[in-house]
Length: 452
Image (cartoon, rainbow, N blue to C red; front, side):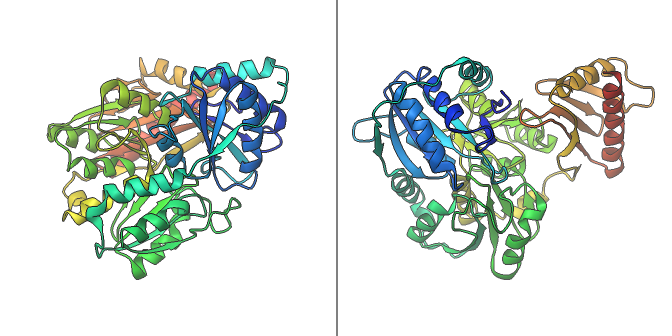
């Protein structure tokens, strides 16, 4: 059951994701999909095509026909849900990807009726698969579609106004699947680009494909310094982005502030890890800012609920409903960032205008799957009567873990939904206060752990 996660299904190839488990997943998923067709694509891992065949076998046994898009980024997979293919619109899409996990991992990101399939739906699917007998094989029913070409053509048409802009653009695909589409898009727009690690290679020979980790950005930073005006880096399945200038590594919440400059009083959804600067600045501009749970599935669902224009996670998931379909797409986010530059916006100058704050990166505290949520509950309990030397609390937000607002900043502790860790982050207008918040909340976590 450990492969069934909050946002997707993920596990180690052969050990956890094998013929038996994946055929059952396909068969069980078929009963959750109303229409006849399911679009399936996969990432660059060597075992992704093998898992594709297992999944097809299960889906076909469950009465579904498969539209095969082959090797694609996750955003292309999402894109197929909004397209007609020879008179057929898929009722669901499944992306076979381990995202930014090490190469032995793989998994499934599932969309049903243009909505993420996640949370209790995934856990229930897991229980169903555990109790199921292996389904009987039926005749293979798979039709190839050229989703990559349709996606590339769409973006090239949408961003014709960027043609031949002279900004020097460098980018790092991390040997993930971003390169499947970036080359054609940039070439067709006549952009001045240079890419590294563009060829998909699921062993990730150059560096781990997670641009939220600083050490994975060393090569693209060097290229930016030598040959670029702006740099982009993508994760393994191209739904997360890093944006680098000569002065800044622009996190997702600051990207949202920049993107929203060209929108008229937008509604923007952020996660609990986003800077207070983002929420305050959006409100100051007349926008509506909503804080919600971390997780790409959570944010997509919340966007739909409140009819938001934009959503973001600090880690680089950026979701556009404004002029787009409402899912996270690092390639589309790249073009929207280039559009800002094309329109004369100085990214660094705009960021320099914002209030100065001291923020930590995400800090992970190791624990166990069994204890992580219990620790959060205990922290909430301890905050009802905090220690005498605890910083003065203004209010507490419990939408996802505990975000404690203090007089000069905030601290967050939440349980990761995908790994056995607690995630903390701290921010203040003063560096020493940020450290004080970190020490105070860490002390609460230790007390909570010891009380279990």
